[in-house]
Each structure stands twice: as C-alpha cells, then as structure tokens.
Amino acid sequence: MEIAEQEKKKYLWLGVWEENLRAVNFYKKNGFIEFDKHIFRLGNDEQTDLMMQKILE
Image (cartoon, rainbow, N blue to C red; front, side):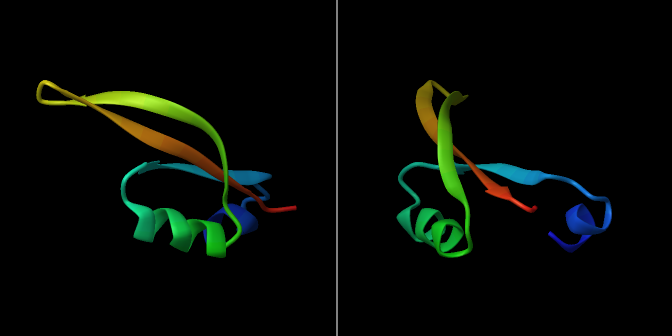
C-alpha cells in the first residue's frame, strides 16, 4: 500500500479465495470491498476468487 500511495495510485485490488474467510475478513477489516468474482481452475476443480479493492484517495 505504501508503494501504491507513493506512486499516486487510486486503488489497489486483489483476489482472495471465497472460502478463505479469515483472509476475506482481514481484507474487509483493512478497507477492501468486494467488487466482482473470478473463476479459476485448480486441477480439475473450479475455484472462485472474490475480487476486492481498496480506494486510496
């Protein structure tokens, strides 16, 4: 976040596995909000990432 702010970025975004509730809650606690979902394959299994962003302005 420090580097993004130094470089005058407007936001950060990340993907977190929807079933990793500990991580999802950590990011929410730190100002990230969910804005979309993304499906990816892990072997033959489809996984869903929550796309989260934090506005830096």
